Length: 424
Image (cartoon, rainbow, N blue to C red; front, side, top):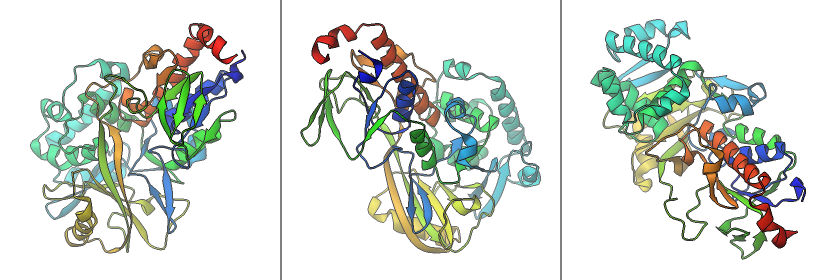
């Protein structure tokens, strides 16, 4: 049987599914991606609303991610760079801090900011240096405890933890208490230190679209939901049953496969609200962090501080909320906070995204996985960042590993013999 004749189905057209398809194509296979929505991307999508580019959740690409460097054409994405710093709103003050070694314009604001002591700022530079020297495998093999405990052990003051680390990394980890593993903190901090946070000019969804454009022999089936998977077939929500030789599941397997133990995925959620506003209160491409205890908002970003392919008539403001909230009151509370506390003149609310499965909630984090570890049944494999850590890099890596595991299993002849009588 020729490679292109195998029926290989990938459930989900997110980043891990697209990379799995790319890996299979590179070895001569022609996979089929089945996607429940109308387009690729999963969580990495961009909508156009009234001329504004609205990403599904405030997201950035860290251009130091090894797998992003490998799989993406950064030049074609026209990546727009954030400044290596943040503007912090705390106690009726607005102050900017950042890395003056990479942007000299941040030197004096950082030196004179009351966010953290001189000792804290020296410790930040020291941590930058330490993590640049520390390898990724070393990070993910170290002892694992909470980010909050890690920061305290490093000697950072309660003030810098409260005013910088908590609001900044709460927005990344999507939890307000820094319970996330110290491994994830070190990995993300290292990636920020070795590169920059960037956004494609067309929005975060351009990453997914570029990966799709790299696929020449993959068939896409959109607006189709898979209800269950077994060794030799897929059952769709409309009752159709599809024969398959192999399946890669990218969205968690417990709801698709009967009697599957210990495969439930826990998720972190967040709210992302977009507003049209009159003007920017942060002119440069810096994220705004809200550090007061009583604030609903975790962070804000004025998207037109970066170049975008399309823009509306005024300014676009993204607001992220990571606290548990009553959805019915959310918009009102956020708009009230923007206008009264932060003096941002809201013209109108554009859209709210409640992203229920924003990041996997994982207790033990890993950087990589063996291809054989992605196999849960002879013909069924798993992919997705939930297997490793919540990052775009992990999504890409897991997609590769699932495809490699499938190819190894197939070409070792361990499964082909069983399938021959059924399909050939």
